[in-house]
Length: 224
Image 1 (cartoon, rainbow, N blue to C red):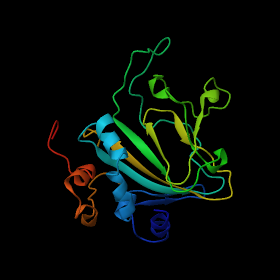
Image 2: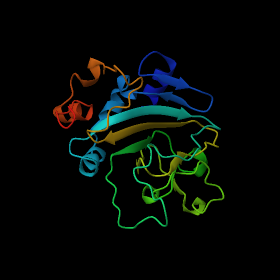
Image 3: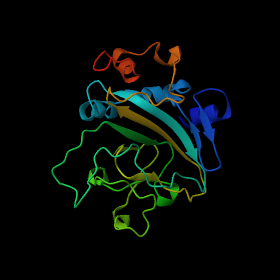
Image 4: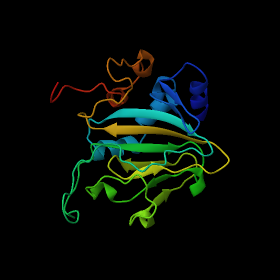
């Protein structure tokens, strides 16, 4: 996948590209990387998605990116607006939110030190019922930061509502990562430019029924 990503960033293959000094992204990486497509139905992650999200879940997002020294998505955030909001007092402890979608971050390089730019999260923050502050330094939550470290090939799974960020890469090497997001049938593809997007035939031509469903060929249901 690292070879695929370098090739897509250097040429015309793959999806839309966004190249900046701090991060280089290939959106819809599956268009130019069969290895990314193979991740979609890779177990146990795909089976976990079918159990946690829904049996008819599908992949709604697949970006690959590099983060050089000094780069990183260092602003804390959530990947969607709040799914519930606590307007007064402490967050209740008897709430279980349905998982509408979650992301799998696959490390394509070793992220074994904080300086490599780990995926950082505040565990349990999806139940806080509050938006994430952009800066965690000096807040009551700073001591709760979890740095998800692991060798190349590791995967970090997180709910879209969890407060998280891609830590700054202070090392002397480039971090490579690919992301796969699984969502409920009700969650549409997030394939820029969104309107009138048409998946290239080569992506799904030889797909088995399960992979084809994960690629977005869904049965009819509510709203269509």
